[in-house]
Image (spheres, rainbow, N blue to C red):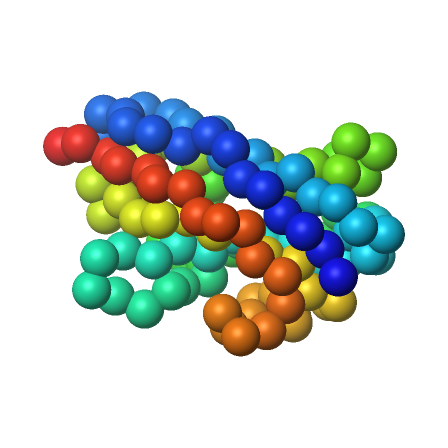
Length: 125
């Protein structure tokens, strides 16, 4: 099991940048794939980005490809999401998640894997 605590986020103007971080605890972190999801008001939670346990592969939703970058530091047990060129439609509560594999993260649901507490990101137009 991996315990996840998120930080970062906030309010930014369209076109700006924000970073999110997720601090992990638990021995399973170093072997877990990690990911980020988001949920806008009235919408279902959607996949944003994922990274393998050793960072040799990443996967992004088409809506964020080229603008967002996921990274991890296994020594510090941290996962980051750098968000550039933000758009109002990026406004959502963002969640980090852990799962055994990249594709398990991509397919994760609130009932599967480990999840952070959520962080609000608001992009003003």
